[in-house]
Length: 271
Image 1 (tube, rainbow, N blue to C red):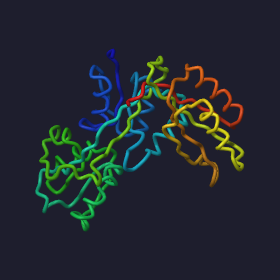
Image 2 (tube, rainbow, N blue to C red):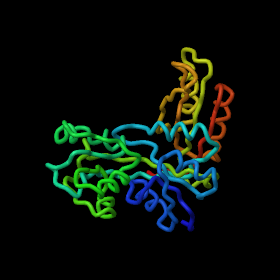
Image 3 (cartoon, helix red, strand yellow):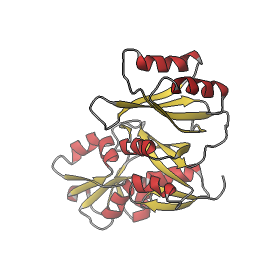
């Protein structure tokens, strides 16, 4: 990997930082307050790439990330899978905690633990797990749900480890840029389709084109267009690169059958 400037969700100690270092150990990291700012930093030419979470194995997709991919003319240039291990962090004792903070996804991933130990405690969502840790470093009354790295970064005690509801907890991060990487032989392509006129069998006709070419679909998800109730876009991930002949031919066929086809990018698969 070459040296580059990478935008990530901050502050320091976030899982996004872990993903960035996993993707490129040489990158110069720039921290942003939220997912939207992180993605749009690429558009503002402040960074070469940005890395943001797109999907969690327990809680599903991150709606804001999917919406930003639809709104902006950017390319997915890579993906990173990070194992998530949440800890309860604080400068105080468990019995003295008055507020529990974390990112909404992390709070959802630790729902059972929170219900068991903090039924009558204020649970406060914040913009990132590392921000929760940073805030917790200023008060013994606050506990953060965040990573071991956050505990080390902000001088917090680890009161409990592995507090997520299910141990097999992974988050998929995407690398957002402006260019499509060359094929590697182990690639994914992400697209969005809009049928425009829904009718019986309309989606099946599209999916059949992939089946006819033996193209492996790794994800299909519907998202509202926000135009009116019952109107949907379909986010699809598939194995292969846009430069592969069978992928290119299939997408050309599909493009003639749908109201819109947007290619989000072809990039090296993490697995």
